[in-house]
Image (cartoon, rainbow, N blue to C red; front, side):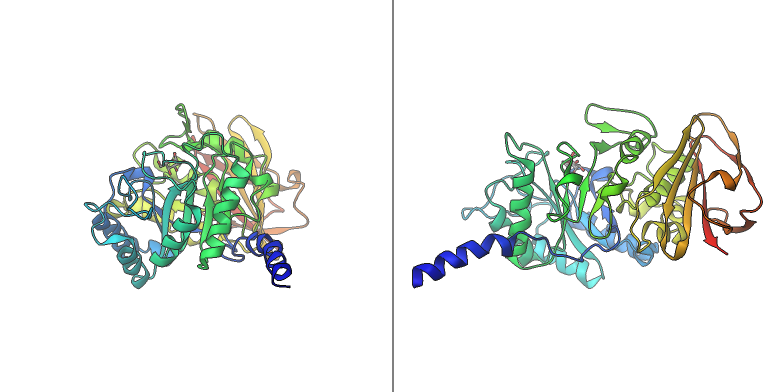
Length: 387
Ligand code: GLA
């Protein structure tokens, strides 16, 4: 009898562990991540300064609540029991104390590790330690785990990420699980029950249209997103990588367009600038409540591209209450004069009121066409509300 019960319990175990914690990301997660600006040059002092800056600049109030510590927080070796430990010099108080600090300040605590044997920075990875590590994260109060894909050898991505998802579930603390597998094996086709978001591309670079071996400017990332809308929705988002808004490689127009298009894509909005040095212009972009509302719309639809002509891309995102966000993007290097006859936008039904989001101006109704200059690499973003 005992044996039958044990067998029955075993048979039930996978079913119990197969699901991520549901409902943690009904809208795309928003926050700040250390990687884009600081790479491995991070410390508990820096993270605390960043938390304070996010609070005082109005970013936290605008919705940026996950503070994610990317690669570089760990000591080079696990301890004698195989536990991950924080770097004793740069994080002397340990990760639990840092998590407590963030929680007291009203933030959620995010951390990075890797599904491979080592992280991309060569620090201990999670492979073979998934359940032990998930227990450590839970004991530190972690709310968000970004899980990278360096040094994975011949590991199968689906199995590996599922193991970590199961480990989080077993550790018992709800954590947003962010797969950072770079789109290599199309996680949008298999990760919906495993995690809450998945990277779709290599790393974003601080530029509009440059390219490195593993990284690319946001213009190229946008191309990849164009075919992925059907895979995104509440609690399961495509992640076109973190924001470069406000970083030196982008002009103001490019930062504004990048932010707008990421909001159209229902992308996670993870700021990646030095929050202590945010210019007024960058602050205005990152905290624009009307743009953020488009990203965070509860319907959870990712925009699709309606038209692509040189200098004139049209992206549309269905919003709740019959509203639409429409973004006109000048991808060319010359200014264009945009002319829109709304009747040609065949996804629209009836007449709408037009709100120009960046100009913060009501523009009348779609019975009249739109004429607007658009600077190179800039956007016009409107919200349409049915009449
Ligand atoms: C990979 C990820 C980045 C960052 C680095 C850290 O390149 O894609 O987002 O986490 O690793 O090493």
